[in-house]
Image 1 (tube, helix red, strand yellow):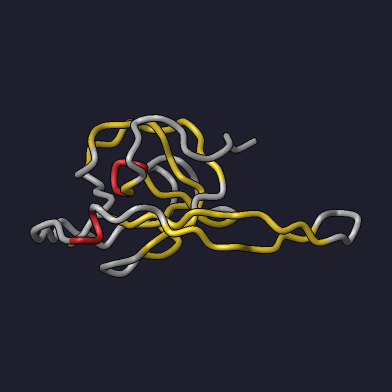
Image 2 (tube, rainbow, N blue to C red; image 1 turned 30 degrees about the horizontal axis):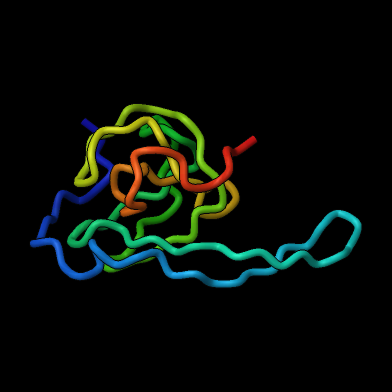
Length: 120
C-alpha cells in the first residue's frame, strides 16, 4: 500500500500547535503587474516526512518529500482521495506550489474545512 509518509512518528511538539505564520509573497499577473498578497504558512505534522505529489491522490507521482519540521504555504485547496493522518481523515489536498499537493491530513491548519481558495 502506498503511504504518504515514511511512517516515522515522534511525539508532537510545539510546531503542531503553532499558529500559521503570515508572510508576504509577490505573484506576477498576466499583464506584467505585480500583486502582493498575504500567504499563511502551516506546520507539517511533527515527525513526518510528507510526500509531495503532482496531483490530489496517492495515484499521482511523488515529486519531492518534505523534510521533518517543514512548513508550507497553501496556495489553494481541492478535493481528492480520502487520506487519514495525524490531523484526521479528509479529502482536502493542499496545493503548495504549481503541480505540488499534500494531503491536508498532514498539515496543521486548525480547521477541518478549506482555509485557502479552491484550486481551479
